[in-house]
Image (cartoon, rainbow, N blue to C red; front, top):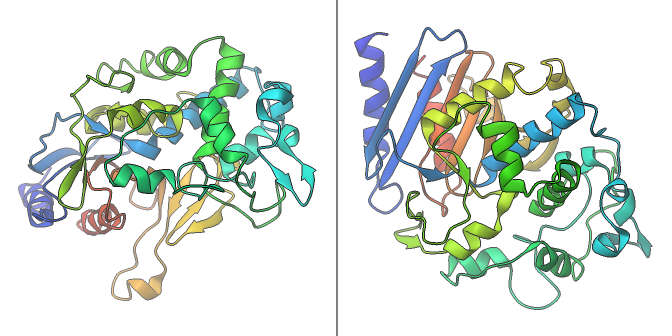
Length: 348
């Protein structure tokens, strides 16, 4: 490991600090063959800091689902009706007068091709978007039935599985949580511990459940902190995991290296649909790919993995065979983590 490279990487972190945007950040980078490993931090986070990984949690749910598939406990073409009662899910997807709720598949949930509205960022029939309520600092708790009741007031975006259509929805992963609980007979926190955290010997990774838990620092929104512990206990597998950069790295490498499911499953995940620029979504897997027009001097390689609203990220860059984990801990500016990734990968 050259001193020049590590100094350059640390310099990038130091220069990324901004009093109004990024008061602290932490990053870990490793090569696929293990020949390079570096971790750095700046500002009010250190290399051992806990943080909310937010929607990066979805990658853990994907790993769990694919492990259940590998064990023969589910098939990606199974429908919600195979695991959840009609009374529980009826009315979450009524499109042009037809209720498709029972026929939504596991694969469509993973790929955000179900058309089901997002309880978190889409607007209900009455009231404001839930995300807007939280960003104003108004903390609240919700359970799965609250999610379903809220979604029933919303209009779906398209018929499930419509070719070329995808709509990112946290509801999809709340539903996957329920499927996992039905199959395993365990609450989602326990299932994650049993299938993911314990096998990898992760001691500092867990689903946030205790509003008194102050291990993860509060997420910044612009210059202020979001004190929303009740909400953070409500996200579950769609966005409620706490981890560190080091333990996120252990999971990320395990995800791509066949620890949880056969490596050849990965090809099935890379069926990309646009969600919001410059991100695309496959089957439980996010892709960050910046068109050459935005980086004419030096092409930015693509990344596979996931990121979250908190500024957390876990990505693999196949061209460079490099893994990146960490957070900028800022919810107001979602492009900050991607700008950081580009600077870091261009150092190699």
